[in-house]
Image 1 (cartoon, rainbow, N blue to C red):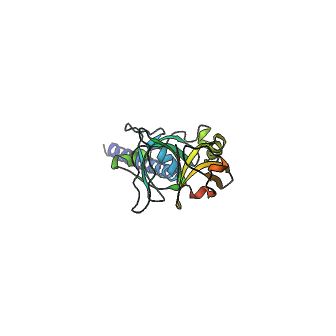
Image 2 (tube, rainbow, N blue to C red):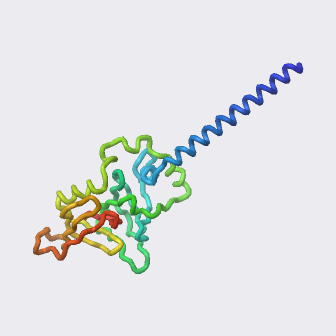
Image 3 (cartoon, one colour):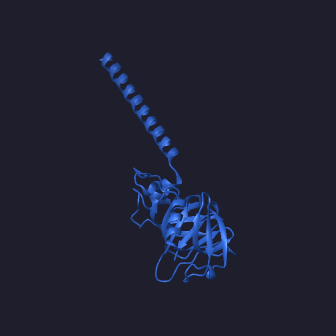
Length: 213
């Protein structure tokens, strides 16, 4: 019986050590996984990736300008996201917030680098950590912000560009490596030389939000 007790004790110790080692390995794997998460991954989990919530994928982001937006992401690119602005944006005192057109949500592009923060409810923290299984599995996942802007320039779309220096509106004439040329004119008029008030070079890093009207 003494030998049986000894073997039982050894077996219990071994099982305890194996369980502890397994728990430690899992904890280390989880730390490594979290260390690889990017802001893009967490936004995808909240608004449009594998972790989409039942609440419609609404995400509240704070831009570097201090403007708070309630958005529903629709597409994620390499360094940007496309979304619908759902509610009237909230801006710091003394600054203008992006407008939302009556009768529908505004379509916008948000450079991920322009996001200063994401507002989460307690239940959303865990959801944001569930990174999509294949965050870069499609072609659009590899498309950069400048590529999208070139397409808007080709289509001659009227855009509103929100920058630290204020709101700029008009048509994108061309897109360089790190900037755009914007022909500024009123909404609802074609981009003609006679309608252009001025031309503006805008660094891509200065674009905090781009709305399509």
